[in-house]
Image (cartoon, rainbow over all chains, first blue to last red; front, side, top):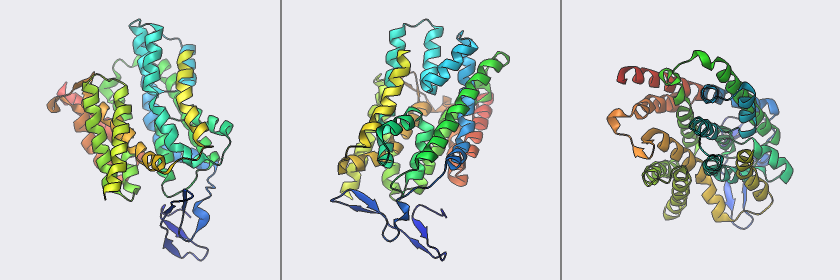
Length: 268
Length: 98
């Protein structure tokens, strides 16, 4: 029974608060009384289910991406390949934009690389929860990691030591299929939509991130520090962006903000 | 396609590496703040910036649309609701401004 990350329910339906403790010497996170928090038995279908709230967000972005890809002159087959192999909304938008204005292949690749460098951070942040798996299995999990599956996974990870592999696959694959279908739908039906921005569809991505951040903050114990981290990140990204760091500004801002978070925790 | 590889590597490598190496304490603490930091930075960039320029508050539809979006997110804790409200808010705001 999953009431809350910090509440455990025993066989007699008695509940108690479980306080995670950090054991300095062995780097383990364990519940005070109940070790069942360590295993995550969530199923594949549970992962699929947990993915659903985020599907609409990516459905609209994928749709918009498909429309833009069609406008940039990509055929249906090319759109299919782009969405399946690249599988990154930000990168696809950039790629389509550059293709439309005849950018060089090298410039496209550089920009895509830096935009996706933040996946390094996401991947690293999620890795502690999959240490029980082989590198090959982690490769499969990592290959389908996105901002959205990252957000959902981290929300589930609060108060837990590890995440279920099957659950993660359910999450990843559902998101992947959804993205592909959305792109194809956009490419196919795009000819009938003249102006996606008028419908506010492009706001789906920021709206989804806002939702994910709020969910994170709501479940965290030390809310104040996390909120401060968020504020610092926003301020940093503004300055970094004005300094023309472009796609690097997100990474720089995130690194600074996270580091400040660690210091704030120390100063308490 | 080189770009596919460039997307694949930063995604996959850290997960494969870090799952087998013991992560030092300070790194684990730091990683705990990364999710919020990254998402906040992304949001900040989307809401406040346009092509490396700060968008003036009066013209920033995205910022205003974020207010009801944040409110709904806190109130319902539903991702679906948040996204829907955000899209509708944006649509309404654009209709008025443009």
